[in-house]
Length: 117
Length: 114
Image 1: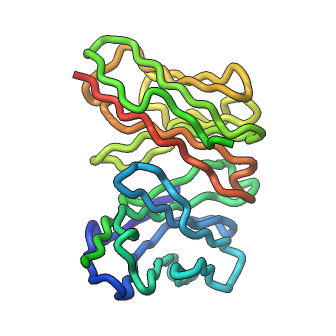
Image 2: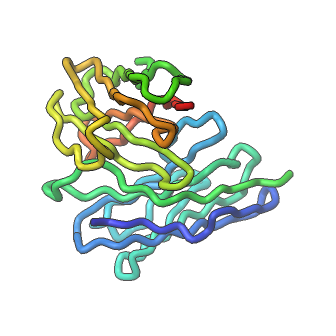
């Protein structure tokens, strides 16, 4: 079974700063997908960024980027120029690739990110 | 499309009562997932369907839980009888193909069993 670990239960930074959220995972699979989801107080789960394990290039989405280290099984999220609206729970998630036998997401416990004005 | 629609948003029920949570996936999506979120265990996959057929229900905690998908536009998650430890937020999500596209989540149902 796959496991996802987020070692930072809570982080707090000042607005406009850069913050990095950590995530490690454990799998014996070679083909899989990794995600970061954001959950604001509204409770809605919002996809922030997605990474295919076969791609060496790190995914980026505007202010959000990842540092994917496949050998180390590490998948950190960097938020640049943080904004008050970034305050939320952030979940790292894993999904096996095609033919892996499971199509659902395995989530970490989450990191509560607080952006201070 | 209005997105994944779950009802009710909030449900409070007494221990021992039957609870039914409902989900309408995005039209055309072949996959439907039910997740549960608690403080202790985080987000867990309960069950998922592909083309209305249950594929993996290994996450369903016990026989008190059951899920159905009678057609492509509707799914239910039923708990009978409910217990206080079932209190959680239950999410429904749908996707075209989870390996190619993102899964879209509903707003969740907050269930409180007293």
